[in-house]
Length: 241
Image (cartoon, rainbow, N blue to C red; front, side):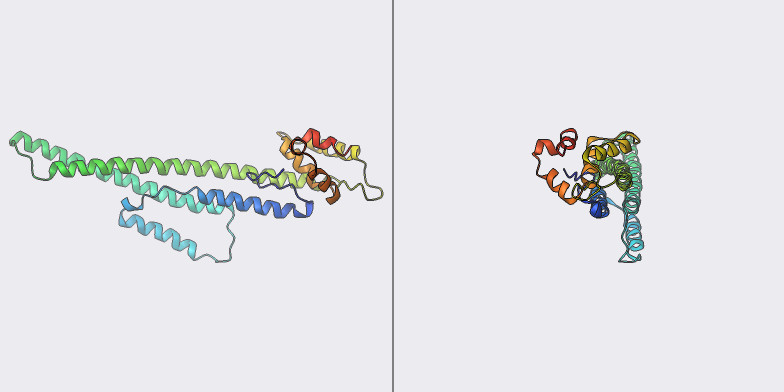
């Protein structure tokens, strides 16, 4: 019943906010884990200083501060931009140096049969560096694109969680043990009415609402249903009837 990706657990309404906090923590963890491929060995010294400066700015913040997913994405994005800029500069320097050496080698070949010792080896070494740096640049760009996609997906999940929580508060909790409590049909009709006012509602959303708007006793009853019933909203909603 629980959906780890969305962080929306099927718990009591009292635990809805806790479930969302856990969901946001998982979202933040997913963003943090979207790290940039290691390429620091090829970064120039001033680039390392830039990275250190970014980290220093973070360290000056309140250590008890809790970063939300947008702040974490902004920090990670800043570091990725620094890395990409450095790799692009590395590529430019390598290409310029290769062009200089190749031009020098051609000039020497035109005037003599011998090329300056070590020139060919340096060109080969720079070509290898160029290939490696180009690959790392592509990896860094791909990681940044992945970060953007994960951030957008995380924002969608959080908005969905907020909307479902708001919707759940508008639905009277179904508790058949209380005198005067609405009957099953009225409860299901009330839930269907609110769901019809939302677009792009999934069965997973319906399952969440069915659980969060039920009493503890009803949730226990629903939980005891077979797996194929618990995973099918239409079967699960009929089980209490």
